[in-house]
Image: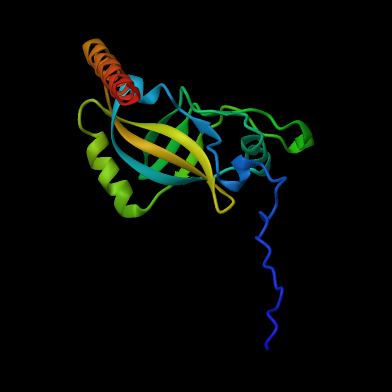
Length: 175
C-alpha cells in the first residue's frame, strides 16, 4: 500500500510587510477631494512628474498637497503649478523649494488633444491625485469645467437622494 506524503504548502507571505502602503502603490499619496466639488471632471490622464530625490521622499512621507494646484500648457509642455510638496527633514543642503513649478510627462498625442481642448472657454487642467506606480510618482490630471453655484447645489441634492435611496433599500431588506 502506497503511503501518502504529508507535504504541506505554505502560503506566500507578503514580500515586505513593513513597506509603506503609499510607496507600494496601495494608497494614494495625495488626493484633491475638492476638485469634484468645484469642477465637472471630463477626462483623466496619467502623467509622470519630474521631481528631485527629496521631493519623492517627502511624497512617500505624505507631505504633498495638490488642493490649489493646476496644470498649464506652455511651449508645448505640460507644467504643474502651485503643488506644495513639503521639505524633507533629512535632505541637508540638497533640499527643494516646496512650491516650485514641476514638469509633467505625457504622451505627445495626449498633449496635442489637451492643447485643443484647453483653448476652449471654461476648460482647465486640475490634478486629482498623486500616487506611486512601479516606484515612480504619477499625477492624475483631469480636464475640467468649472461648476456654477447652482450646479454644486444640484450635485449635492443628487448625492443626498441617492444616499436616502440606498438607506431605504437596506431598511427594506432587514425587515
